[in-house]
Image 1 (cartoon, rainbow over the protein chains, first blue to last red):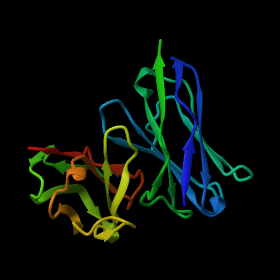
Image 2: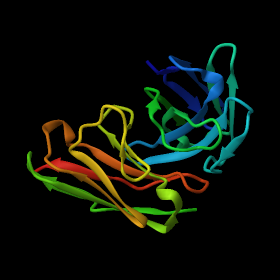
Image 3: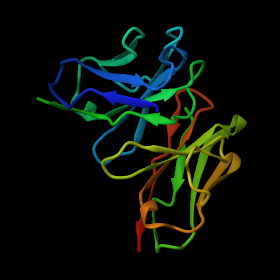
Length: 120
Length: 108
């Protein structure tokens, strides 16, 4: 069965960077895409971006002020989300979700989420 | 970007009742690229409906989706105790993909 296992919670200082990992299993990682979604405390879902694991194409919602980078390592079936210049409003649970390989679509399988807390 | 507006914000119903949730898009969503998700506290979202009306795998048939263009509906035909949760719609027609703000279905 499809499984996405994310890295653990982190606490970061304002201005720092963080890298969240998402290890996939149960399907052909290189023939898929990965979408990242975040959810601030008590708030709704926010679509951040998508990467095609097959060819590296990306779509970014431009929601993260400090910038984000999505990458993938097919040798370990792991996707990564790096956030830079963290601000307090980046505090959220970050989810990875398996997506289509050609273009971002609906999200059938989700990771368990990674809580990133940003404080001064 | 496409703005999705969900209504009502909160729906207070009793088990066994019918729930009707609305999702309205700021512009027409082509090809019915509209999905619905359920989220319970402390859990990741779960896909319920894709393509506006197609149930995802293992989703009970009391969940149904309908609509096209700018107006979409999620109907739960008879609420079970486990259905009380948050529900989000998402469009995947244009970038950036966007979610609605959610509807909470709570026990009356």
